Image (cartoon, rainbow, N blue to C red; front, side, top):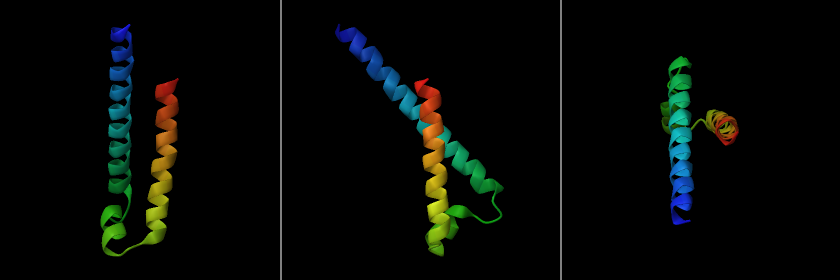
Length: 71
């Protein structure tokens, strides 16, 4: 019985790390495609609109990834 619970725990951790890795890769791709460096624009110039847009992108992508992983 304990072995079954560990199997689900490891599967959950694996899918969590996979989802985070996909999210980071997608953000890096979007950052490279944008005409400006998004991360520096958010940090240095305190562009709140761009920060909200990046947050919305990450939330939307996280919902898609979780739906794909969950089935």
